[in-house]
Amino acid sequence: MADPGWLGACQSLKGVVLDMCGVLYDSGEGGGVAIPGSVEAVRKLKASDLQLRFCTNETQATREKFVAKLQRMGFDISVSEVFSPAPAAVAVLKERGLRPHLLVYDDLLPEFDSVNKTDPNCVVIADAAENFSYHNLNEAFRVLIGLEKPVLFSLGQGRYYKETDGLKLDVGVYMKALEYACDLEAEVIGKPSPMFFQAVLDDMGIRPQEALMIGDDLVNDVGGAQRCGMKGVQVRTGKYRPSDERHPTVTADGTVDNLAQAVDMILKQRGH
Amino acid sequence: MADPGWLGACQSLKGVVLDMCGVLYDSGEGGGVAIPGSVEAVRKLKASDLQLRFCTNETQATREKFVAKLQRMGFDISVSEVFSPAPAAVAVLKERGLRPHLLVYDDLLPEFDSVNKTDPNCVVIADAAENFSYHNLNEAFRVLIGLEKPVLFSLGQGRYYKETDGLKLDVGVYMKALEYACDLEAEVIGKPSPMFFQAVLDDMGIRPQEALMIGDDLVNDVGGAQRCGMKGVQVRTGKYRPSDERHPTVTADGTVDNLAQAVDMILKQRGH
Image 1 (cartoon, rainbow over the protein chains, first blue to last red):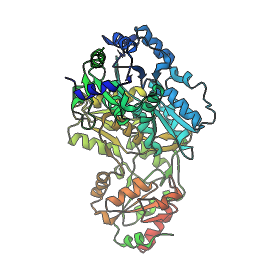
Image 2: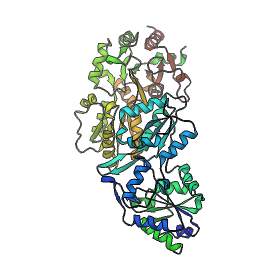
Image 3: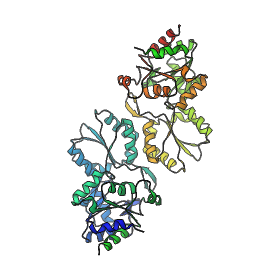
Image 4: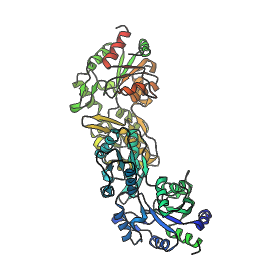
């Protein structure tokens, strides 16, 4: 069932990085529900000698609101353990002296409170849902095309996701639209950007080969982590599809039924 | 000023194809205004022994409404002389037994009256302006992703255009968005598709080397016509920009100030 390769590496493991939606919980009405066994699996990891971080491309709420939702589901999790694209974007904007025009979900706006947004010299897009209107897209485009050197940041590059009322186009689709309109290449902040994974490793103070990523998204979680030198294990929950196990370019280091199984295997291998 | 190459070819010329917006008229409030000299230039071509057709990527109105607007500006022009993407799309849909889901401008819908649109097995997009809403894009996406073999037609592939109240994203941008979302390549109907130019040549019953395209869009008018074996001349009106004259991949066979100058040069060369 599991490739011994990744389990063998568990001996030298120092940290685990968990994707959130599709690994910890399934999204849906009322914010979603915990995936069976995941609350307990997080508790076990926290009780172990492994470091633990959470890494999400979630951009429809501030980290505070998002973490509060997970806590209500029973997860032992705090804001400082969660890496999401918006704070990473804020750091990049400040470092490069950029003032963003924002096309994001309303609930994400507070993440950018500390950023100067006057006279914008770049555009930041995230999954904006209903805010991806004809008017707002034209507006973001006009900011970009009016710049001598247009800079576009995209918080993630997902194609689509599923909500209870059907499939919805994700931020990557609008990123491609603006890339074509302005003949530029966006800078992606979030998974699968190596810079994003590296920030998580830096926070734990460990090397890539000492870290394991567990996610449901083969390309963005597993492939992204692997390109960074980490091991990547896919769970058969969330957006997992059987065809992922014969993907043309990304092969997970292991595939497990769910987070609970992955954690039990890791801890058993380490002699707990 | 003009490259003698294209003028030399005028001796064997049998037909002229004119782009419309930016060559005949400038769009704007109230439908736009004729470009000085263009009404008279069309009259001169019609009085000559050359065949004349009009070729546009206009998709915000039926050909009937569009031609009526040009007639009000003073142009001697009839519907049967105008080639636009919607009727070409209708022909393709019928030939291939396809039933479209339409994401187009409301005023274009009557062009598709004769097409069966129940239980759609393809998607057709055109410049839909305000109809490019988050809701409508998700809807078009769901039709595509639900098909075993998704087929997307895009009426043109423009990046953006200018209206009196600013730049607007064009259909090509939304085509790229849906291409990325569904991992497919759209079929473009309209300029610069060779099939589209060929239909105009077929209608005149002449060979590509006997035809000259005059347009303001270097890539879609001039480059498209050239790829089809026609000569292509660019006018310095409409969306012409000085940088077009040093474009990395497309070089016009000639560049003239406006349609009036082009027509005078052609007719003089032919001894009129």
